[in-house]
Image (cartoon, rainbow, N blue to C red; front, side, top):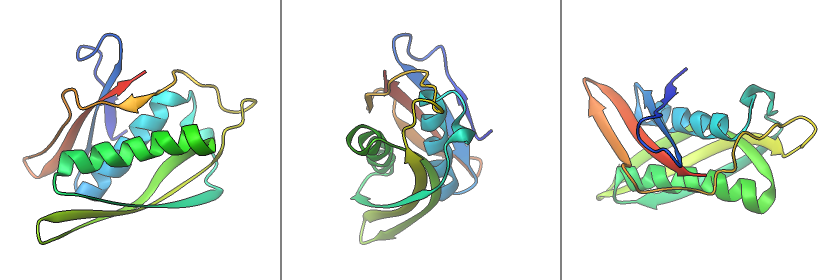
Amino acid sequence: MPFRFLEHIATADVAFESWGETLEELFVSSAAALLATMVHEPEQVLRSREVRIDLENEELDLLLFAFLNELVFLKDARGILLHGERVMITEQEGLLRLEALVRGERIDPSRHRFLVEVKAVTLHRLAVVNEGGQWRATVVLDV
């Protein structure tokens, strides 16, 4: 599992650390942690629907913030639970661009048992770093 929950960071919210060999793997791992925070068995969320996400930001941590908040928005606005499937991050003239393909399905209360309702990703302790050639992120979710 490319993430772990951090119980000592936030007592009223949920925090996790995610990692990957590449930035793209880090973003996919972070999406997996978000989904695992929300539903009991994220592997039960079918990958039958495809959504494309395009985002830009000058800061890497804020790009991750926007990506995860977009997944929360899609859950709330369209009723879709999503897996991070494929992410591509490029840089041009100091601007980071994310192109992501996410897959999932509409929320089905008979199959998707929610653990907590994630309201948003917070900026509290948000960090994206490269340590020893591995990308790591710390994320706190408002629940």
